[in-house]
Image (cartoon, rainbow, N blue to C red; front, side):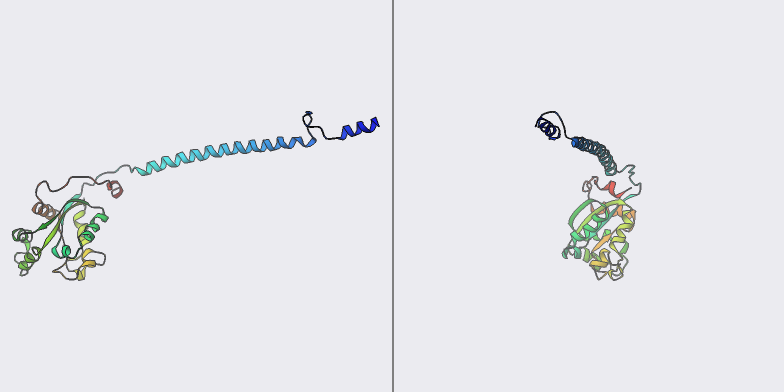
Length: 223
């Protein structure tokens, strides 16, 4: 009986807390090793991601502030006027938006009733033309919107935005090509040279009426 009990004692599972482990007790050790390795791996991955994130943020910061921005030496000013037909037809906002979207800087803006003397001075180059009286009557028939715009090459570019004098010959996408049908009602005027731009701005705006300001868009328009 004692021999049998001893055999049973040798083959029985150890009691809880007796300090002995079953033969498979190495498995938790293996599991711990795997977890530890995974932790180390995640740690290395975390460091890599952290460095990558920091690098990405730094690159983003560099991209957010363009470098080497140099203002163009060819900045010009031009006089743009929305004629009485453009005002009466409610095209003021549409026309202004064309120049804003292009990226030009609005320096002066006013609604103004043109006098006959001012109209004759503005169109003095046409005074020998047979249609000169009609032009004067037309431009004084209602309020006009006077604008001074500034930008790199703004005179030539504005002329392209406006389109041909005859709206029927103006390209689609231009102001006259989209919004007018007759030369005598071609909705907008634009200076035809930098010198005329200066002359016309001085003619239509008094001293102190132009605003001196800088647009925050400039770095995103000029390389």
